[in-house]
Length: 395
Image (cartoon, rainbow, N blue to C red; front, side, top):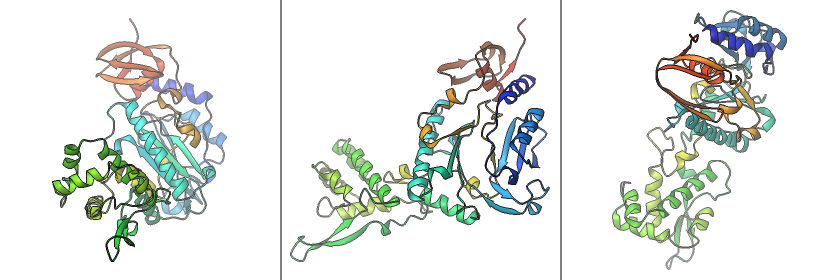
């Protein structure tokens, strides 16, 4: 604990916290190394006052409210008088489907989900980049802050609706995919199954991309493999599955689907309807036909909570020693947390490691066993913050 406090003090003496807009209207909370619980209901009039407090107290974690209050330092939530809140999204690798096991793998996976969520906010919701702030949490993910006056007054229900849209919950596929009359099919014409085109806005374009992804996946399989996949869906037998698979082999199939045409051969509409029926679970959340790849991920309770505290950019994460790092949207793609969020150096530190642990940092991999080790300071801080090592004096 003493070692970590000294290193955090070393950082805060020279660092400048990125105070959020509306600092005077926000509540602040802090956790300390003595595990005495959160000290909240704090308020500051200026960034200088905040920095002085952090430098004198050396907290383990620093948080500020997403909300704006008339009296942010009041001791009860009612007395604070809520005036609005940023729209917050919290993406944590622990909450992802099929999360990678390694820390570096988790961070790469959650970055991809963050980029996907940003595409929803920019294209579907139309928020300007200037209204969006992206922050590496210092732990296992990213925070997105939307600061647009149009959403400040949203309550919990409205914010849950945003999450519902991102996740595809309640998606009604019949509103996107329908039958339309087509001339030339038999004496009296026929009907063709039509999907949204590739360039359709919102979920329409996402549905088209997921269908194309599904078809391209089937085309990589041999016929028995594709039939095995298709016949898992109730109502699709081997004969229909074979005919459907063969219809996907022709030239121009993908281009037809991009235009929204799903009737690739006479009778294929019935198979598509069965496949699409399997896309939604009992709660109406998209799960099949690769639509799950199009879903946006976020921690719903965080987004819906209009009084949530969120980590302050520029502070240190007490569970990793990494910097809570503000990023531009354009800079997110190239950002490497295990390089760019590391603030401590390479001076050697002697440690007692209490259990096996593997990690990567600053381009190096570490696979550590129980016992004593001499490691760079940046790695030592990370291991001690994670609770798997203690500083020792060399004898």
